[in-house]
Length: 230
Image 1 (cartoon, rainbow, N blue to C red):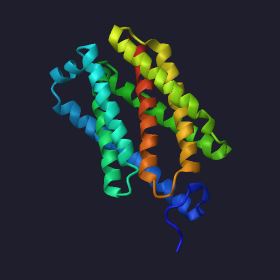
Image 2 (tube, rainbow, N blue to C red):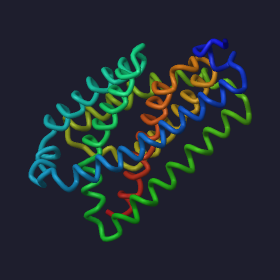
Image 3 (cartoon, one colour):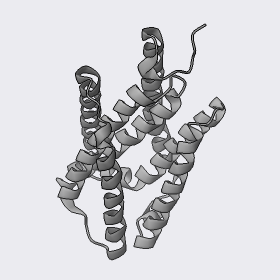
Image 4 (cartoon, helix red, strand yellow):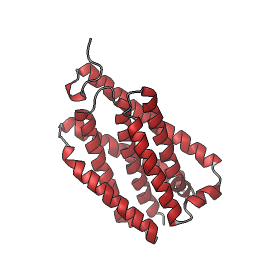
């Protein structure tokens, strides 16, 4: 009997196909779950609570801190040997993303063409994600060299976000453009890692990694589109 938990790079064609099918179907289900949860939150969370989330620099920093702690926990859970724990981690992360997105989605919907703007951001994000994924698989390039850029860039971006929240200055269009580039690099790196470093049984963890990068990309594409309406 074939080993059902081997490196994807060393797996048979049948095992690779099954791993990628499970990974990307889980990404699709995570995106669908995000839409459902976000829709529920928009309809049940009072506007006063959403306004409170945006009411002060320290409130938003507190929310970002909780998001970071929850994300860390989710990433540990999705690589737990128990599949129930893996799905708990993925579900927790989807909920966290829906909460952190809630104020921006509500603001976007306040524009006259808000729903259309969200649709445009989603389409652009999916096209970019598909293109970046195709680059990894068709060029067979090892993008592990992007790890330093993604890690260092992520810490620098987090520092800028925290400083911006504390001192109340707008990060501007170019920061959003830079974050789109960073998110794109993250997708290239994560897809390369999934292809070369993950085991065939780690498809839930792989899906979370890709989902997180997609949501980061969507966040800043939406910010760019919203900035054009100001």
